[in-house]
Image 1 (tube, one colour):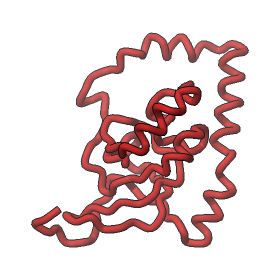
Image 2: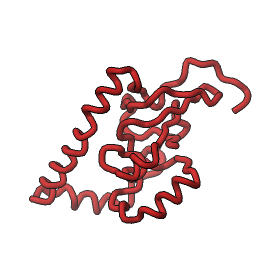
Image 3: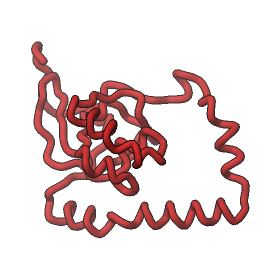
Image 4: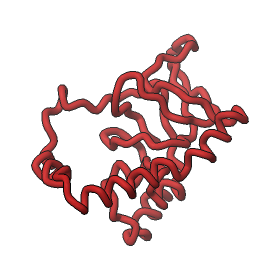
Length: 157
């Protein structure tokens, strides 16, 4: 279960019907990409699945867990998202990443960059028809992860 918001403030993610868990928070199954892995809870079953499927560990961990577009493990794990998020990953709070130098090298325009961007475009579009169908059938909703719930807060969680 992803507890954080990562990305632009107005970013929306596709989530199935959310269930209230108290204190104005809801949880719903994530149906679109929402990267970032600063705050999440993992079940024992999910940890065992990750341990058994190390062959799939070719992605950064946030994509591995929460990017349904390109992670076969994310599809197996059925990630959920808490709304509103109780954590926010930000470079303003924690400073710059220690892999920035490595990222800059990856952005150099050459044939590897073009190949990577074509593959990325494929993965971004791969699930779009199914995601649009879920939204049109009202099985899922586009939700701002940091948007407060309209439910009153209760004292117990």
